[in-house]
Image (cartoon, rainbow, N blue to C red):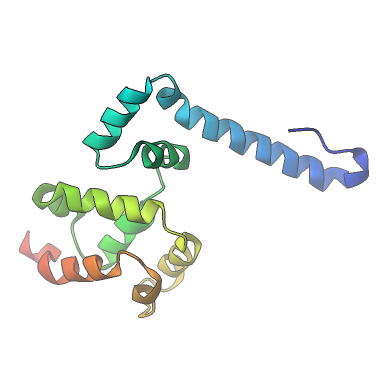
Length: 142
């Protein structure tokens, strides 16, 4: 990454610094996996139900990549710990789908401003499962 010329102004310098910092944070997130032999990465990936490529991609996303699924569960009054206890593979799949979702910005915005707006189920790839959990595992059953 090269430093922008002075002709581009301060904003470009700020943008360059931001990109450099984001790049460094992403590199740091995957550094633990980079030290693993490919067969070890494959084993770890299999253990958590991912492909090696998905595991590496997920590692670059950081620890908050699936925050929206936890927030949506909460809005639907579903206890994530209960889902984890009853069906850990299902929760892992919800997390994986949420992490790789392409409508994350819209979802996050909706959760901030109107959490139960009816259209969330039209764009959320986890909607069918989440709505089903909302009817099967409400908090009141705990």
